[in-house]
Length: 292
Image (tube, rainbow, N blue to C red; front, side):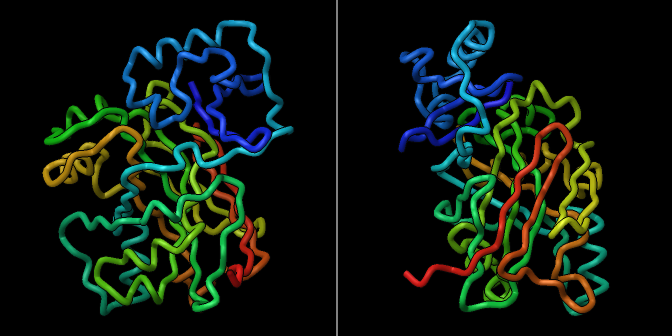
C-alpha cells in the first residue's frame, strides 16, 4: 500500500494510491485520521481500515489533475546519516585526503522547515554556489520506540520514501554538525509517497539512480550500505526516542557533485530526478532563492 499527500482545492489531503488514481481518505471515511503522521500515530487498526478502502468503489482523483505534496509535511524529527555508502566514502577519500572518516555512525539534523514536495522547486541560495544533490532512501518510523535491537528494526519501520538530501557544501563544512548546510528551506524533497514496509521485500537491495538534466550521476544500490538499517535504528534509539512519522534519510551513494573533478554543483534551471526501485521517483527543478 502506498500513501500520499496531495493538494486539492486549497487543502492538503491524505490519499491512498491505487492503479487508477488517488482515493481521498477524508471523503471516503471521515473517521480516519486526516494526515499521514496522525494515521501512523493511530496504530495498526487505522492502517487496516485504510486497506479496506482500496477494495471499495470509491471515486478516484486522477493524479494528473492534482499536485503531490511531501507525504509527511511536519515530522517531529528529520535525521540524516553521513558516510553510509562504501562508494561515497571511497570518492570522498579520493577527493579530500585530509578528511577523517569516523569509525562510527555520523548523524545530523535536517531542520523540518526544509521539507519539500516531490516535484516542487529547490531554491539555490543567493549566498552560495556550492549547491549539491544526494539521492537517498528515507525510512519512516511507524511507532514510538526506544532501545530497538537491530534484529527487531523491521517492527518499527512504517515504510520508505525517496529523498534528496540537498546540501549546501560550504555551509555544511562550517560546523562539524553539518546541520546548517543541510537545512536550507526547500532542501528536503521527499516522496512521491510512502510505500509501506510490507511492500518492500528487500529494502537493503534496492537500486538508486540520480539524474541531473537527464545525465546519470548516481547509480548505486542500498546493498552498498556500510551500516544495516537495524544498526542505524539501534544506534539512534540508544540515545533518543523515535516517534511515528519521524524521517531518517540513510545516506547517499557515490556520484555527488562535490566529488567530481572539477566539482559539478547545481545551477538555476537544473532538474534533478531521483528514482529508487519499488519506491518511485521525485523530480525537482532548481530556481533562484526568492528575495523575500
